[in-house]
Image (tube, rainbow, N blue to C red; front, side):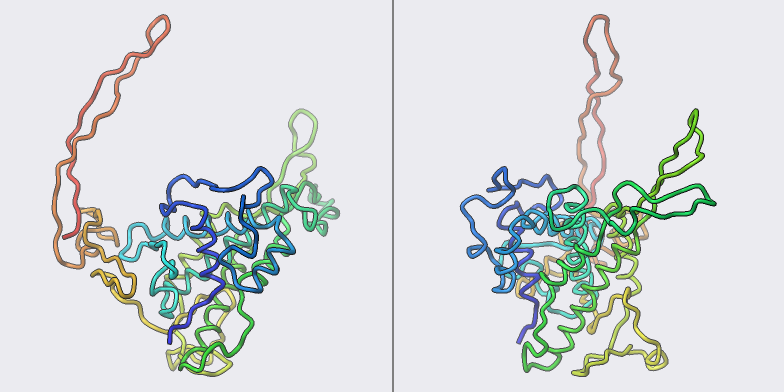
Length: 354
């Protein structure tokens, strides 16, 4: 029996019901009214779990943030893995991420982490922009500071607590025994741990920004506030956690332990990503599991990294195509008043995996 979270499925299907499949391209907010809620679609008709539908009915003003959070997450996932064998591809079918969503691999861990982080980021940003009355700036940082160092808190600090709370309520499955299948409980534990690690990443990547005040541009006094990092930085942070993720024992026990014997007494940190199973090589297409393979993918012949033809093509070799590129060049402003350009052509080699 396959185990995968209806929360992640609902979140991604909700996004795909309003957006085109190309998650790296421009996003079209299809069917949205000016009020920010789906036109002709109530919460009861959206692809959500019963608990999510209830949360949606009580807080419909956050629906655009839910969609935007999923947009951020999928776009960042595809950006971080665009040059690797697994490129975070999505589909319009019910299992949006394919087998990775239930495989218990490093890829599963990253998906849950980035989706949870995307939701926190989008909801918190909406709060800071004043789009909802339930949350706003971090009031705990409105006063105080360090008079000796010449700065004080001010401005609008991002208040991530509300976004974190909502992400937990919307995504986490609190049902402890979702199946009697071996590993079912521990997969749920793994998913919840990685979702929380994604939320922790928002706080870990926050920074303090300051503005100087004083006569003639001096910095006699500074006003400072806390702000979330751009989501690209959060994605990079989580990608580093993915590359250093920890394999744990797949056992139906409450305490998850590291698989390496000599490391089992080392506690697992909240910010670490964990996984049970080793990843497949993603070399060949497997429609049953939703693996697209790397055939036809563009590769870099001179690179020794994951985008190199040797690694990306899995040793199958590659085809070389000559591509003509035409662009405007040597443009000059002519008096008066137009720009004259030459038409330049170049021939470039493009390599694709066999």
